[in-house]
Length: 248
Ligand code: SF4
Image (cartoon, rainbow, N blue to C red; front, side, top):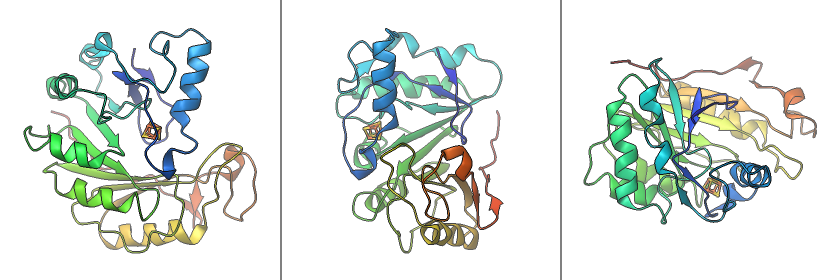
């Protein structure tokens, strides 16, 4: 079933696909991999094959249709919808559900930006599908923004998490929302305050909604401690901006 999420920028997760493989430095300490191994050990359905094998969960395709209350869904928190092992015909079915549920918003986030762009060359993006790419660094992350900008979509967003270096100038034309966060976990890589502040400044200057998700394991002061203790404030305040959700 779709489940309530602890992720700060969404309401529920919907996982019609589980399992993934790593493509870039942002994947190094993949949260989904850790969770999938845990769920596999617990015998939870959908995780029988562990993480490295992509599983298509046909029985989950219709879950959002049963929920009447308008909800923001994060699609595939445990995978990547545009993974090479997910056939176009299955992505079609995911999009069919999104189109059939105009009361909800669906956040589709990928590191496979090229495939997402190619997929939408032959299919219109529903207005309630927010398309996003992960941007963890300059060499792997920033080129994804260009692919995203080529897609005709009502709401485009960037997930800059884990932020691994100063990204410099970001191309923000056509981008509605930017989420920034540091990495969690015992092996987390640190994020510098100046890197996050640089992105916040550009978002505010360009009218882009800015969401600061977390510091993660390394605090604003460069000290390692719990994620909760490090908190969610940047430059003295919380940043929870989110694009307006128009419910049909
Ligand atoms: S693309 Fe996402 S889900 Fe897949 S390995 Fe990388 S971080 Fe994990």
